[in-house]
Image 1 (cartoon, helix red, strand yellow):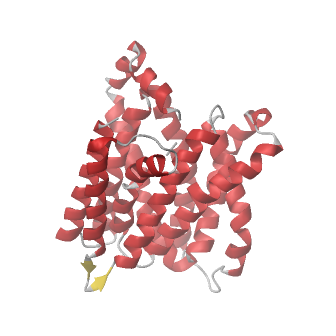
Image 2 (cartoon, one colour; image 1 turned 180 degrees about the vertical axis):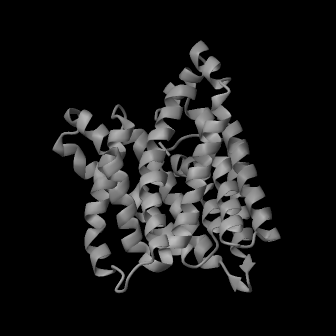
Length: 303
């Protein structure tokens, strides 16, 4: 989830952007991206019990990096070795740790829980920009933050089949916070670098750093074919190819309009889990999701 806000806003006001924004393909492309990223929580829910978080995230990072590797090769002159430690650190914050937290949560709660928490990324990005980097937040965005956090508290009180999902909500919210930190780091320290190539570096470095833990926590027994299929889909489709599609949409319709995919991810995550895994969607989850998505809408209107 990652470009320069000012440049995207300028692009959104050009005649070309206005024309492409009305392109009939745009709603379908946003739906497709929302479905792919919503499906990532379904894939984690299927694969995490068999692989465990470390092995699953290692596969996700490595496969995603491999898909994006051609973009890095084409732009290799823009990535001298002195940049790699910084990019590796951003990769840990923006990819490895959030992926691990969501995979851990997927072992303990329905897929919809992680998908709903993921929507908090926009709010956390604004909060980090305010607290750490001194950006103005404004009254509307402050209200959005409070509303979103109320939604998280409501979600944490939810019970599914009599079991509390509080720990999974905490993990998902922490992952969204790390995404928010990562977005601010990308905005400030990766300016001018091609995004797809940068993602290849951050994912690849994260895969290398996580490899020792993945090897020591690799499943002892055979992994079912369905779990393998979900892991490959998570890495290739939901990480590598989704990044390419995401950046293509940003280039064509602008970052502001592309960010509306945030609203679709929880909807598709919950729908797929209910449809394919027969997981319940409770009234409390719906209330929390409404509060969080409403807060995201308020926050984006404040831009």
